[in-house]
Image (cartoon, rainbow, N blue to C red; front, side, top):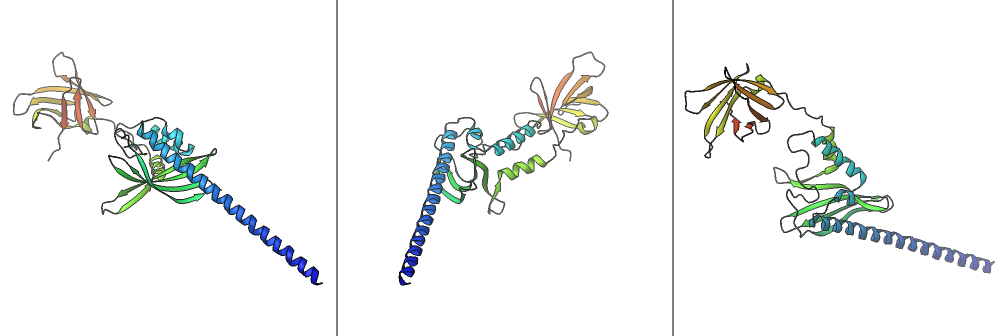
Length: 275
């Protein structure tokens, strides 16, 4: 009986040692996977900004996930219908509005979340250059065996100088959900007003008056003489024709953003705000 007890005890000890060995091996394997994932992600971020510093193309195709690329394509397709600046006002990877500097350096990389089984990660870092220092955060996913950027988290200071952040993917989705505003059609009624050309000192020099009945006048500021016109509207183009005289139309393109009339010769007339 005593021998049996000793044999059972020995077997239990061997099983316990084997279990501990398996646990240790599993922990080492997990640590190895995490270390490998971190190395790949750090490499991706450094490669991304090395490419940006060289102003290389196809950054999204090389470093972002397919979901990000599809959303960017959808935003740019919506922007194509706008006359003014659309959703993107800068390079979302660098926050630069002009060309990128050639001295980007990624600093203070910190892993806030990493799950190698699910293939997700959140990494914060500081993007340094000679022009500006930008805190950034990426969420990443593992796609087709490679780590790729899933979202960009951007930081900013609000009106109270309190730091806040926003998700680019959420902001793009909200933008895409907004109905596309149709440009209002130009009519005699909404184009009625006074439009002045300005001299170098920004003083009014000459004036076009558009009336809501399709008539117009042109005059020099301070002069009692004026020329009478009728005008037509075609899209954003307004053409003035001198009354009672055979002459070519004087056509102007109207810019709703700057509220200006501009003809082929480059003369610009600015819509005046009535007191």
